[in-house]
Picture 1: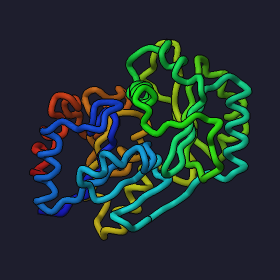
Picture 2: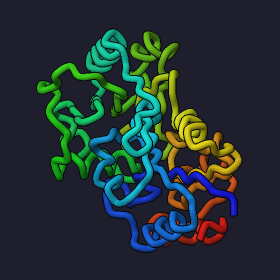
Picture 3: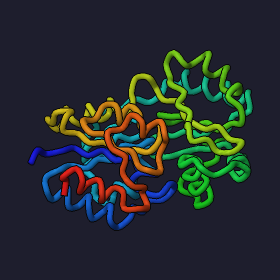
Length: 274
């Protein structure tokens, strides 16, 4: 059996959105796959602080911050925060146009103080929105923006009501950043994130594969939303959850059952990992 590298998005893929607890069937499948010699990595938009509770369940490492920070065990393979100038420009132009913002360092996240009120009025149907709403409600290390202390930031997450609110920031930053907008829209809310063009989840997969000496054809990626697209396009075998984005399903090799319907366990068995 060829040794595989398995990459798992967290919210909406490994766990229900906003949760740190995978289904028991998923963890049984992951441990069985590891016992068979495969390595399992998280591949997520979360920063290391927000993924830490899941990492502690026993993964080999992670492509974190949507590819901006990649590590395997204690070894850092890639580290690429925004420049101070990029951060200042993005934050200023988004704020001036009424866009709600969160920013993520390696070990902390800050959010606009009125973000919770905005999310409370937004609709369901978006795993990122659900995650942020739960994280705010449970105070999972999301600090008020006025406490930001200047440490390096990897990603800006934005939420607004109209696409035109993003246009000034796009004009200034789209050369260096992709504005990744979730296509599973919530009512009265548009959300997404600024991802540095210097990295993405797909490049993170390649960095890990090179470090492990594994061919890209022996990689498998699981995701559910359009921020998983580069991972899905890069891995040797791509899997989208049934609860995921219709567009992502179209470009994935396999669509497996939903996260809460034993989807990972079923797919691991189908792929011969266990």
